[in-house]
Image (cartoon, rainbow, N blue to C red; front, top):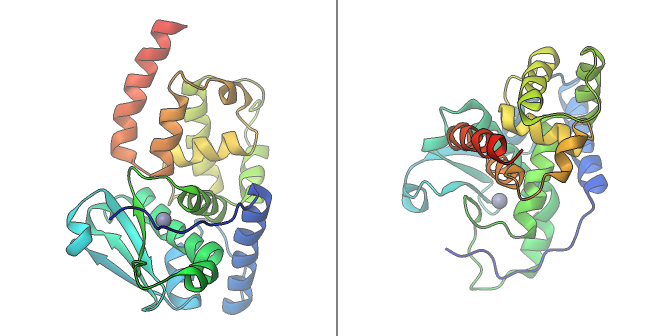
Length: 239
Ligand SMILES: [Zn+2]
């Protein structure tokens, strides 16, 4: 299935951050307690937004390139069974589908016609605007900026330019100290770049970081370990 024949509107990163934060606050009101890390995206989807999470390897999901999908009409989030055992990938997929609910549901329902598939899918390869937006939302939801900032305050000398290896180590520390136990190291690396904690790497486009980022957006811990090893080799050669 190709991506939807539908034009979604641009949403600023700041707006996506705000809407992820708002969802957390609404969920806090709903459950009557403060949300701490790891952000319980499964519970937000099921107990607050009313979705059923269906882990499946049937139909479309026989193909591992479909990581997940959301069917608004049935209030179902489908997750490829191949993703289930990878904590980071599983949670990122659910957070991504929640992103579609928050950012795209209304527009999707208003703009669809008889030819529109009833599912928005998370594919490995295709990255149209709405998929990138859902990834940004997922990062913001799983790794709230203030929680990352709090963890960073407890890590000495963590600012300025940074190597890929140092970024990996830093992301590991942030995950541990900040309690981000449901995100992959790569997801945290990219979050740190987005939030401006890893400045040196923003400018290394074309030297492999782009690959690392896109692999991360897909939450591919298996592939990105492989990719990271290749990347390190590559960077050693060209430095
Ligand atoms: Zn998607």
